[in-house]
Figure 1 (tube, helix red, strand yellow):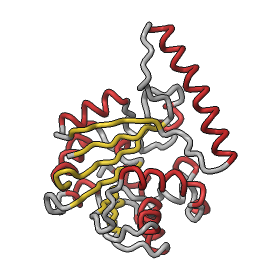
Figure 2 (cartoon, one colour; figure 1 turned 60 degrees about the vertical axis):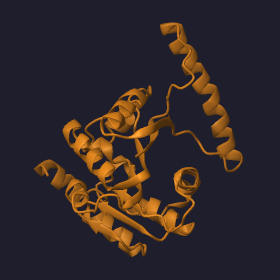
Figure 3 (cartoon, one colour; figure 1 turned 90 degrees about the vertical axis):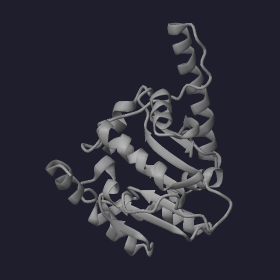
Figure 4 (cartoon, one colour; figure 1 turned 120 degrees about the vertical axis):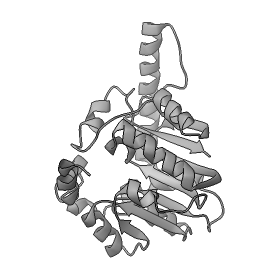
Length: 243
């Protein structure tokens, strides 16, 4: 790992990357609806499924996965501070290490789901190809890779891409599909990271997002002459790819 990465990751939590200082770690409630919705939609129904979260941070995804009954979970993160916070939260199976190096030690065809939530943007293009090759190797046939990453097609992509000094790249629906296909994945779907309605306030946010999204689609249609219903405008996007 390059010296600048080592230095930043050593202080990743305390330095407040993307505004996430130490005081924010315990505030998981605002993320509950978002992460639980993802789990409901894309995790297998079998609660014995082997789940691996690469770049798991302080374990938010694993925390909610365990809340709904998944127990065969594990995580990797290169930040000692983040791993310590996961341990303080009582989440076992989280280890400190370089994601690429640890993936290399995991047996082939051993995981049902691999999650890369706010992770791939930290890799160079060469590293990312190698990472997805390794993830493909460790997934079982029919297993899923779930990615959350900065969306290069968003009007406000720079807010995410440049909000963390360790970020290297952003992706789009097209480039993410291209990358997953090259690494052998099939059934590749990309979609927006839109508000999840779970109350009045979030319902209003969801409705307003639909209005704004319609205006953005109209802008692109005026410029290009094409009305693409599948365009993704949110600052981040999701990608779900199957082995």
